[in-house]
Length: 400
Image 1 (cartoon, rainbow, N blue to C red):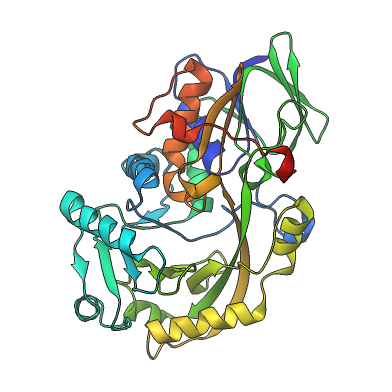
Image 2 (cartoon, rainbow, N blue to C red):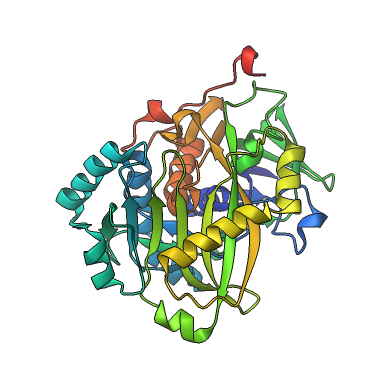
């Protein structure tokens, strides 16, 4: 059986690519990727989509364009799949003068106010809107109201929704790890961990973090220029009464110190039936350069001191917060140089790579997947984002 397209990677971008590709009449598509494990100790492949809360915002330049297009299709994805995965909670972006990018932040906030009617608010105005929030006096906030591009989503439910629609459109889903990629007379051959082989005219590699760690094209191409950032999150459990008190809380980012920021999700019910606030931040003290280091980061969990610090931030932001319990969790983001745009490129005839979400893949994955599908099936760049910004860069010998 010869497919038109094999999508390798069953995460956010890969699932979106499979949905968009399989929507085309007469196109045979298959997606190969590992499902979420029940226990992290059972696998060495971890996905940032194995989670229940990611914010979305249309604020940033390139990422904002990609997100705006994606968010515009969220309702359609919910309707076609029958799976609810997002909430228009609004989004609040807060910064203070000590933040290294404060001048640029002010410029971006003014643009958001002019172009998208997103007001700039003082701490007092924020507290008037959200009485439970307490911001430092020196800060300023930019607010994306509900239905204007700000909110939060469940990445695991989004993946499930994308794959359900893709299957309904005739896409085959193989729950396995792809382990081999070779050129073949008909195009490409992909092998899985089970020893199965699949052939296609075109392959789209959407391997997330593993594009830079266990890259399926390693025998064909140099290593991609990707770096990895460890993320620590504090999942702060609250009861029903407290969740109700915070029910209008937007998703947030707070930038008060030179190079770090904290991202915040309002109360979300997780699969275990408990409700958590999520506070997350980069762990810049942890170096991740190998597959083993990433695996250990996921398996061993974060530094308890870092989780405690995030919990203290929560208590400062939300005075009187009634905490029932706190647990830490880990994540990893893969970053392209400068974090300006994702990698979206044709690297060899019939081989497309889509990766490097820079911590924003959840919110803009549907558009990245759509553009990847157009590249794979038509060889055509179908985006207002500059193609040159998304071209693959490889590591130089000095970095290897």
